[in-house]
Image (cartoon, rainbow, N blue to C red; front, side):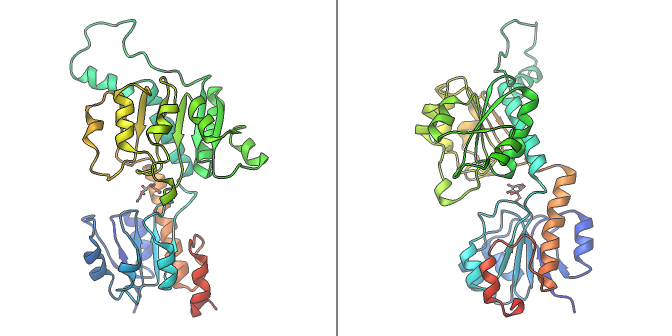
Length: 331
Ligand code: 8YV
């Protein structure tokens, strides 16, 4: 008898196929977002779960699931996992880093460029049949090339974004919890470390790439937005909640900053309706990692972690390494 696995979201059939060699799968072809009670009932008697950021894994869930051994998200962000609770209940928790760095960096650039050059705003106008003549002043935007790119959070994705700035003759400045060593700064297109207020004041285009945590909540709020240039653009491809959406809407309404490109939101998928009334925003539905190749790689990575757990090997992307000392399996 194979151990049971809940695949909590719809993923590529080839990954399901390869997982089915080792596990008896319960799939979710309809891609329902399970509530906590639905998750509990589906996870009873399961060895593991493959999930995305939509599955909240905390003490309340785990206390009801003594047989669960491993939870593997296809995302790099794991703010939906309470790692202390996972360790307490002897559950291995894994994520899927690295495979999405370049694709997510591409998308950060796509959003930055669309925002600065008013791509979606002008397309909506054209589709509405408003284009009667070419006009010298229509849809003037901000240049990307030759300007200063600010990156808040210089991890693997931040560095992939920074590297791309070379081709646009941009100066790159960044702020991070700690300063990177020289080699990593070089790898990041020669990025220069600055304090957060300098980053906010100086950047022509600011991209937020910090992982979500309680301390990161509203890292960009009214006070921070007030420091930015009125001509600046802001892009968030990290997590909703890092930017204070209400404060951002106010700042965009008052033209305190020029425009924003947002792939993530507080309370997504229910957006603050204030965004929908604004012209100076580009809004996308959390798709920064959504290329065919990368989504496949993310799901394969989660599968690799699950198979390692099954074979009693340390999963390559284990997040709560302190759990190992609690598991006799690995002693
Ligand atoms: C995922 C992400 O699409 O990896 C992450 O942290 O935000 C995205 O790549 C999404 O979170 C999947 O749940």
